[in-house]
Length: 309
Ligand code: UDP
Ligand code: MG
Image 1 (spheres, helix red, strand yellow):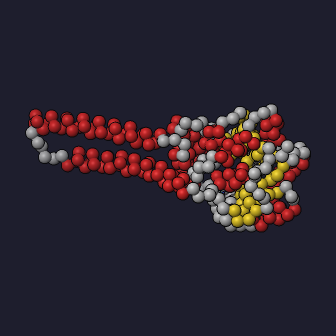
Image 2 (cartoon, helix red, strand yellow):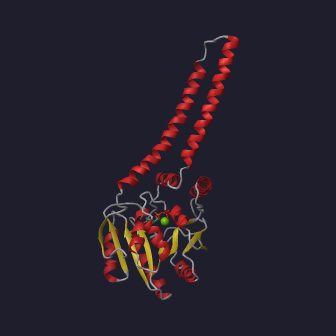
Image 3 (cartoon, helix red, strand yellow):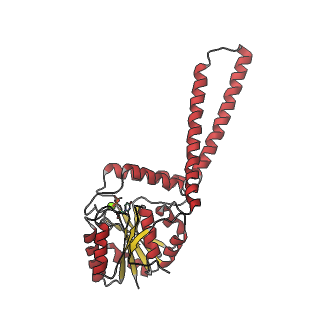
């Protein structure tokens, strides 16, 4: 049985050798037959050079260097497409996903599970970050059709069935947390202690996270569009009621001129509603635009591996 370990790396020169050493140690200790697939997501530091030298030293190390930074979603997809294993584990390069968990995941896999999710607790995370994350998952789960869980990241084992299902989903706007949940299959969870980054810095700014958050809501259904429709409908009803009341008032009391405030108020209110609605529609059209272009998810500049099948 072959295990593929998929590790997206973006500017991880400080930690990558340590990660490799830890992984190699775990694989040897538990005599797991594994290939380590490192995806260099267009790093601007020494990451690609380090990966190449690891590849020369160890024939189990495969590297895929992208032509530029395509994002973690694309890097994970590349890993899944190149994975030759009977199952694959996706993990971060910074040792926040402890390699010791992998043998435990494999045990579950052998029990017949297709997805083994490693769930972390949020101990030690920046307080504001975990607060936002928790609130975000509450919001998303109320909006979206698939269930997404807080503390469940991309660290998971996938069987060959699950890998094939994921690589067959060819959408351009990928939101893995949703996709993992969408494919289904027999899924189980194991818990591990939250780890902080071994070295280097996080690649996620608040702006990235916000962008990712919007993706999570928009890529998974059209409820926001429906929300616009409902809101617009309510606005029309309220507007009509207002009109009737005013009309009756005019018939009874005659026209009284100072209507300036109310006019401006209504214009401003509905201007806002329209702008929001157009924005929501724009989000979807933007996504459709990217989908129809059918561009590849990533471009490979250099690799010592070949895509599976
Ligand atoms: N990553 C990537 N491409 C990117 C950003 C991040 O491949 O554009 C990788 C990064 O190298 C790491 C993982 O995704 O292996 C998670 O990133 P990070 O640790 O910075 O995120 P955090 O753990 O802070 O959420
Ligand atoms: Mg990290």
